[in-house]
Amino acid sequence: MKNRLREIPKVDKITNSNYFDGCNKKLITKITKKQIENLRQKLIGGEIDKIDNDRLLHEIKKEYDEIFKPSLKPLINATGVILHTNMGRSLISEELFKKALPLISSYSNLEYNLKDGCRGERYEHVSSHFKNLLGVEDVLVVNNNASAVFLILNTFAKNKEVIVSRGELVEIGGSFRIPEVMSQSGAILREVGATNKTKPSDYENNINENTKILMKVHQSNFTIEGFSESVPYKKIKELSIQNGLLDYYDLGSGYIPVLPYNLGQKEPSLTEILKTNPSLISFSGDKLFGSVQAGIIAGKKELISKLKKNQLLRMLRVDKLTLSLLEETIKYYLKEEFEKIPTLDMLFTSIEELKKRALYIQDLIGKKYCKVIQSETIMGGGTLPNRKFPTIALWLEGKADILEREFRKNLIIGRIENDKFLLDFRSIQKKDEPLLIKTLQKVFS
Image (spheres, one colour):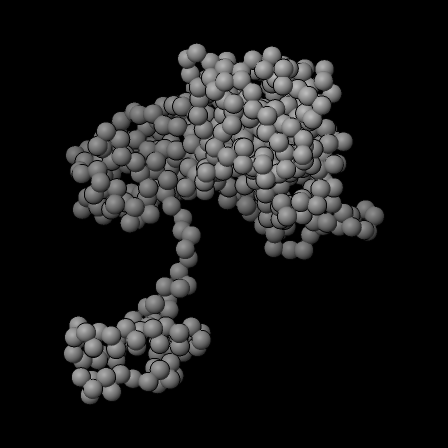
């Protein structure tokens, strides 16, 4: 045994090998020490009885190369869920990214006033476009909608009461809850009504000298059905005016064009909400709006100005990449080129078009391996809760769990429905279809 242990090569002899030319010496040394210790333990434990130096070099280089492989990888989303939170929600089109690229890869007037030759404001680049789009006095952008809620409550309701319906005390992804966000912001929660029923009188009866905000929170990831009642935002606005209070609507997700399949029936659009002339609203940039992750705050100029003076804003502000991509998205909205926003393009794609694409792939793969079926899907991402709409999918022959694992290994994520493995075309990008076809041919070969 001692003789075998003596055969273990020295660390410096390994790290100085030409095999590692061009590699980071510090990393190679760290990995070598680990691999040599593993080798020592295997010799002592009797797992191996001799040392293979070539294999040792290979294992070290293999571990080194693994470090530089990207952790984030592009996936083909074949689940049918357009705003899949686990897969990054909204997509940014290549065309839009190319438009923003010169700004991202160059110095820019992010905070430089070209007209006066002095320091400028980073928010003005998107706020002017947003004001044209939404018809509001001013807009402020922070890094996500949770930040928007936090900033608004901290600015206007620190140590003051905020009245919210019990039926709207939502928990969003990652166990973030409205009551906790409110508590951390310094605001005091005054919950009113019952879980299923809240009336205008519930707000009125709880207004006191310490009340600052009447807040409505959109039920973005659940619905209350049956014996239920909620207070329309228009009524909340009226009560806030009558009592000299601030009204605020946390939309969570906001959209502009009329949604297909009657999806907007229970989901008011930004246009509808803004008709009530709210003091402040906030929504996510990467949900139904179809852009980058951001929290968009819109409303009265006087209130936005106060938000800008809050020292927390520096911690919550967005960078030039976010602002560049968001600005280009707003331009598409202003031109009503909704088809250039991938989230909307996928949602608005007709069943006929989806079926045509699925049949084409079925013809290539063979009808004995797959079947084109009509199904239903959801929007996802904390939007349009419990609202299903039609889609087209390929049902693949075989054991669903085995197929799911095989396609996942090839970075294609489908879904299992009624013990069938489906590839849903509602969320599959056209540019990804050649790779999808190649994988299908490989699996069924």
